[in-house]
Image 1 (cartoon, one colour):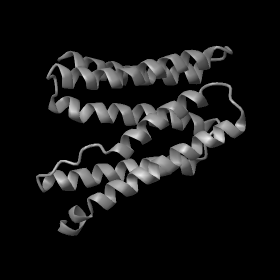
Image 2 (cartoon, one colour):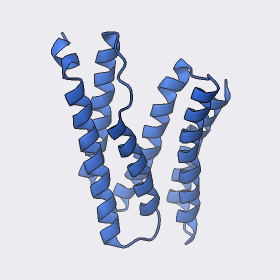
Image 3 (cartoon, one colour):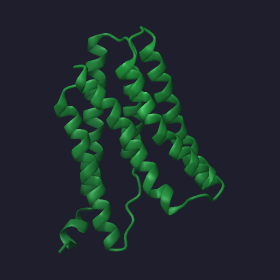
Image 4 (tube, helix red, strand yellow):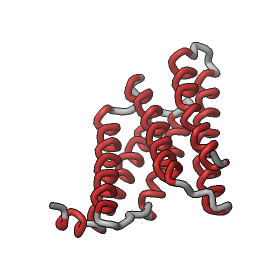
Length: 175
């Protein structure tokens, strides 16, 4: 297993640690420990991608596991926010539907021999979601939390619509 894949697996292992701190943490500093875990896990995403590309460590395992690890990390945080009433469940549902939709579209495209790479709006969605999650783990004003939820939902919808609009031909060709 190469360095990039080890970092991806480290991120996967950090997800239960992140949730454990949130669920079992009773101390006032528990959210800060969870925040630190989330930030480190998020940074491994940037680092493993850089290492994979720069040192030619791109693998099929990494192509599969890296986006899965990202989705699991983000979903874990959002599930926590829904559970504690910091995010409405419908907002998380929008995120999950977009992820399933784009993943399904990519599967159809792959079956047709086409790769749908991450677009600019998908990268903006990922970055803004990570920043919003970091903010939401801090003791912020409710109105800032509301802005974060709105940013997550709007960037998710925009990037999902963009993926589908740019690849409508994949759906019209589907049998």
